[in-house]
Image 1 (cartoon, helix red, strand yellow):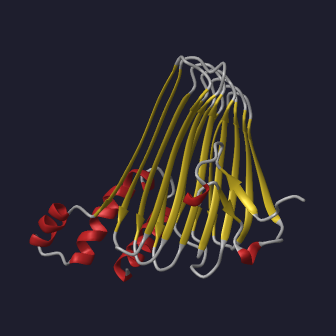
Image 2 (cartoon, helix red, strand yellow):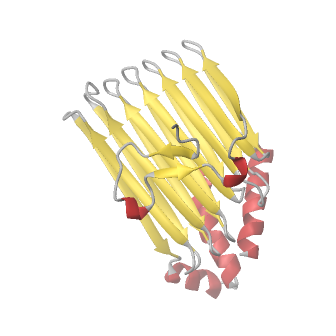
Length: 279
């Protein structure tokens, strides 16, 4: 019998007791229809698409980037704090094509997202920048996979996050070097700031290789707020909440700066500032 409740799985399973092998569809969305959107960038063309998700539900975005084409996809999730959300993004990248992705996971009570990028063509590129924020009792579950099948492909995955209150997050980031992908390069880095002793953070960096001529790097930085930074900022007249907000904003700026629409950037920034101040 098919498993209809599992939303996403990591490419290589690990110890079951860690609870990170798969993500589940939020109970309230079980059985609801998936809304699908398709994006095609034709050979040699360039495009930029900005999506703002404000509705609860299950979504899937299917992207096909033909040879030599370029796409920058911005996906900002600002769903109501009391409602769940899932989103699956599947991307095919052709020869010499580039996929740039800027994603903000800021809303929803329970979030489950999957990003699956297939660098099929030689010299295909993926440049992924993500931001997540958890407060209250929010649950954020992310699974990002980049498969590098073409020769001399280039993958960059950079993720920034902050957790406060009693929030919980799982981030799985996988670089998968496939057989035949000689000369490929991949970088993966996650940085998360923990603003409360009651948060639960799980980071699962994975690197798989079926090819010897590749160059892969991954890193995770998890830590409490730097006390020296806080002391310096507070010595300049800021209270603790304001100092924390400035440090988190500095971490988020490399992601937010990629958003082309100033009005959307300002909306997200204001939204995060308010949540940080209330936290």
